[in-house]
Length: 566
Image (cartoon, rainbow, N blue to C red):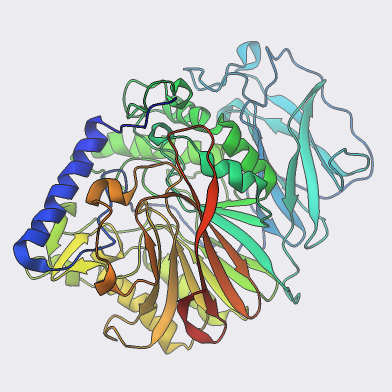
């Protein structure tokens, strides 16, 4: 039997440091316990780049293609040393008339040079045929085209397919010579003005490769969902936190943290080779944003976690941003001058208007040295109105989008916990929205002042499942509810209970639901009448396979603020 996973080294030391600090606060008479305090493998960021992107148009370097009924032959194999689809296929950012299709040509995901083991064609352009069909057997191909995979972008392929029918399921694949990729399944969004009876989406985050097996993705791949959101920490810069005996497939062959583009490409290869993750990508379109570990723990824009050289970190961040773009089916341009315009919005008929945030690239630095457990009485920086989580442009874009939305539900897909979680006057984690209280007050105040209803915030980062009502900053515990927050647990990263213990009294915080121990994902069933959330949790991540269960179900009814357990 595989031994339970033991996360050691730098990661474990940070977790233990936070645990001691937390217990010390309790011993000091704070008298409360908190669903906060991220362990050392969570973080922050701010940066350049970023622009408004509404999801309704595509202006990327990728090919935009409409359907054709003329069958195309697959390009000749240029001399590939093996089947080049080791990372599988994916689709994402669906519109009513199309989706983004993705693959990356890789024979060996662990090739140290970051070129995927392509041998004699590693430095050459490679032509790839993509096909879309109604049926999994591709009896009738309804759209196809030739895309060039360039070594400049790791031979990744991003195809923005257009001209499809709204709210319809399709299958897709890629071909080179007689080599054919796995078949993926995707779905277009409903038309913008369509009356939509229901939508089922899942969301997940925090999947440290060496933290444990991705048993939850096996269940997600078998789940009947229309859409998957990933809220960040898709990869971790920690290469090998010692996953345990018998888990060599979870190792990342890096000696230290990634620094170069080749390092980050290798990191993604080590992650995306997992068959469960590949199966989940093949099942439904994904919408992906990032958190901090796609670059470095708790970085803030152009500011690294530690006092490293600014120019060196800028090069590292640029490499990480490019690798992120190369490995996801995102409807955005490749990185430009070191930045990536990640925030965007997508609509699903008149049912859901989804805003995807970037809480890392544009934020200001964390206050008071990014310490764990900051006394609000002595940290004057907390009250600085110039501190921002999203940056002025993205914050304005979000408020204007929410205010102008005519959809029943407004969903905000973002990274860190928005709910206020403190112990007395002590802010445990200033990397969360608690460290940016003025920015949070502006956002929640704008939602209240503009009468924006049915707002649901979807959050990852904290390695725990939870649900809470969000009230205006000055509203008090019984003030009007202005939004609702749903937090997904980690896929495999160490749980919050590992850092703080399981027997914590969370009653003082007014949480509707909390599970600090288990791993899994969230499933949301959305209808015009209600938003129903289920936490799908696995029994273990210490084994390759595990049973799953629905741990809790919480709903909010349209027009009636307030979460309730059902």
